[in-house]
Amino acid sequence: TLAGHSDWVLAIAFSPDGKQIASGSSDKTIKLWDAIIGDLQKTLAGHSDWVCAIAFSPDGKQIASGSDDKTIKLWDATTGDLQKTLAGHSHWVRAIAFSPDGKQIASGSNDKTIKLWDATTGDLQKTLAGYSHWVQAIAFSPDGKQIASGSDDKTIKLWDAITGDLQKTLAGHSDWVCAIAFSPDGKQIASGSNDETIKLWDVAKSLRVSKFLGSTLGSHLKFRAWRREIKILRPVSFLKFSLDGQYLVTNLGEIKIENVSTSRQSSDFESLKNLRVDSQWVCYGAVPVFHLPTDFEPRCYDIRGDQVAIGLKNGRVLSFDIDRVSLDLIYKHSA
Image (cartoon, rainbow, N blue to C red; front, top):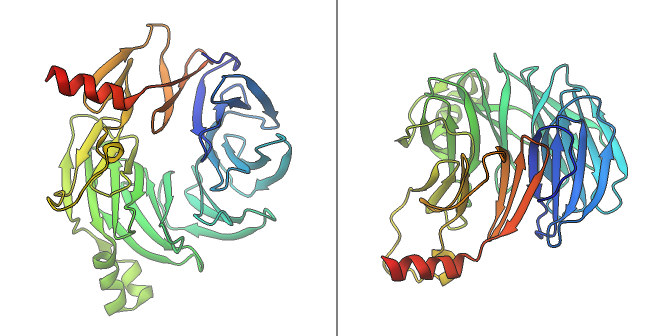
């Protein structure tokens, strides 16, 4: 257990190489930890309010943090030095994402906008407006050309990441949209909502109407034909696609979304189930394997293969590895 924050841990993320953990807290600081041995490396101070969003750049050299002080701060992940403060939002910053090439940052705020920033200079490039409520989730497409965002106004919007133009509004959820992800091939979007559903959207199909009617008119027509709806028993707060695009990894477990070809040969590593945190349990797929002590209340978590990092309400960061290969063998032999 990594002790350090004096208040709730609200955001946590592994670096791309899995060697660092960054945690953001309501104590207004970010802490950098050695993910292997658990040592505190740096405490990054500068925000004047809660830190609610954290993201590493794809090369792991930068950290972006979003705060209730309405700013995004860029930090050097090695030295901990503050590089830039990005000011422009008029309300809390709730979501942050780097583009796949690391050159652009998208931030979503309770001011109902998304802002695009140059990750090197910190300059504001575009402000994307059109929502009627808070922006909760942001994701870049794998090629970096599109941005998908989810809002408390129950819609998903697709944007051109270069021009900032609205391409399409996807409507269908009956409550807040809290999680969003592109499939690895960029052809699908998955959206998770407080309405206890996940919806899968066909990106090309949703944009076809805009193409026929013209970008200006087409972008303002709401598209309601989702490809598939998956009903869940609880709100969906986190989701991402598996690397092969066959599954969704969510806060409620793995969900199969495609039929795996019988001719496709999967490696042992690919066939392993994902780890997740569900209430006080750390689960391997659907199977609970480790129960957290009652005073360890998870507030956020990040998973990277066998690595688990959990941010707790008591200000601690819990970090450990679980050998999924051994775990998989145990469950297969006991089945």
